[in-house]
Amino acid sequence: MNLIDIATLALLGNGLFFFFVGTIGLLRLPDVFTRMQATTKCDTLGAVSVLAGLTIYSSDFFTASKMVLIIIFAVIANSTAAHAISKAAYISGEQLYEGTVIDEYGRDRS
Image (cartoon, rainbow, N blue to C red):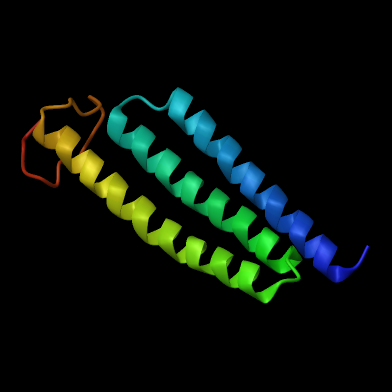
């Protein structure tokens, strides 16, 4: 087993770990905002790790460059979409978890 195989397996394992943690966060956290935060971060890190591992393993330059572009798009699109969805949920009146301490948008929930 050479260094490229080890790096690929490490990145794939890292991605699997983040996907698993995101799934646990989706099932265990109390409200839509905390669930979204957990799944967005873990989904982005998981996808980037898996795609980075496949990029390292790929021997074709064009395939690797396409995966790098997908990584860049995923980082930008995941965070932007999560922000837009959470803002829409907040505006539509989705309730925050009762243990929420700070409401940055200005509604007083205390």
